Amino acid sequence: MKFFIDTANLNQIKEANELGILDGVTTNPSLMAKEGIKGYDAILNHYKAICEIVEGDISAEVLATDYDGIIAEGKVLAALHHNIVVKVPMIKDGIKAIKWFTDNGIKTNCTLVFSAGQAILAAKAGSTYLSPFIGRVDDSGWDGMLLIRQIANIFTAQGYKTQILAASIRNANHIIQCAEAGAHVITSPLEPILGLLKHPLTDIGLAKFMEDAGKM
Ligand code: G3P
Image (cartoon, rainbow, N blue to C red; front, side):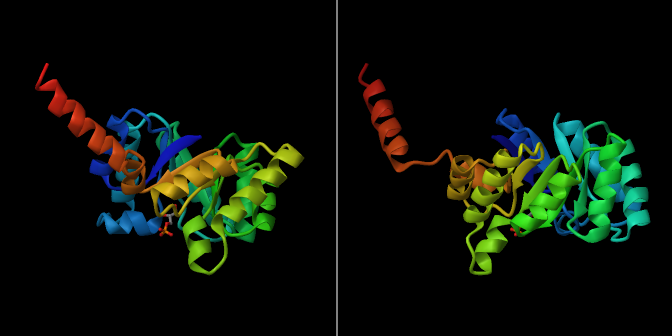
């Protein structure tokens, strides 16, 4: 399972990259706005800065919601760097645009996926990745992990090549459950990734080893 970091914060991207286990980055308009990035040039420059830090797929989301606008924006984003993946919302024009990008050799990430039906459409359009938002599914009273399992079973049965990129990760346990459920990729904020490091018995054991090391 690949690890992407879900942030536009350059320091956090660097910290995760230095762990040596990072395979890519995902961003969205909310994450970019959180970093105070304003204006078209600043947005494009920020994507370039991310591409310089991480050698892996970097999702950059289009802001247009009509077919022509999505295609035009996607072309500009894809031309920024060979690692850019054009992130497209799960809407009718988005699916049409994903098919166009697929036919023209541009990688895509279909975002805002909340059902298996949407996942099937994204796979049929040839999307490189699709992003089910598991935390938001949980928030709405459904089971995000059940959705990942259902999509994984369908993709195995049908031989779809689209990679399941589990998004809206809220804690370390989500990451573990995604690995078990058959997600190809998780994208997570830094904290849940660092949360995987933690176990109280590790801390207790290390403290004892250090104490005994002093007696050697
Ligand atoms: O990648 C999608 C993610 O950014 C959404 O996360 O926590 O806002 O549901 P969240």
